[in-house]
Length: 137
Ligand code: TYD
Image (cartoon, rainbow, N blue to C red):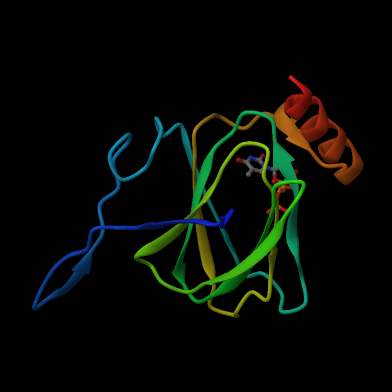
């Protein structure tokens, strides 16, 4: 089973161009509390390298492309995101890394909670041991 969950957005459009509208609990599977975006990332820079205890996020390259590596503690999969109409769901307890940003990449991230550093797991071994603990429950 794939651990990569892609969300295809509904595209509204006419002869003037395209439009995507995102609403809480409709297009985005949670209450939207925060939106941030990453841009101007240097070519050889990788970001992420963490998981979240509770936070859920939906990420979309509204311009350009980047590669996501998703890791649930037992499986690792990658996917290239390169469409403003297609997003990836970053569920809680999913280790994620972003690589190979194109120069024009604008990665928009929609989040279920306000920023909270205590929700981050930045140590991979700690991530693995927390996964083991939840599995044991
Ligand atoms: P971080 O989440 O580590 O970035 P990435 O996962 O892309 O590598 O965030 C980088 C810095 O920005 C870090 O100091 C925390 C801060 N930050 C906020 O203040 N608010 C936010 O909503 C986010 C996402 C980050």
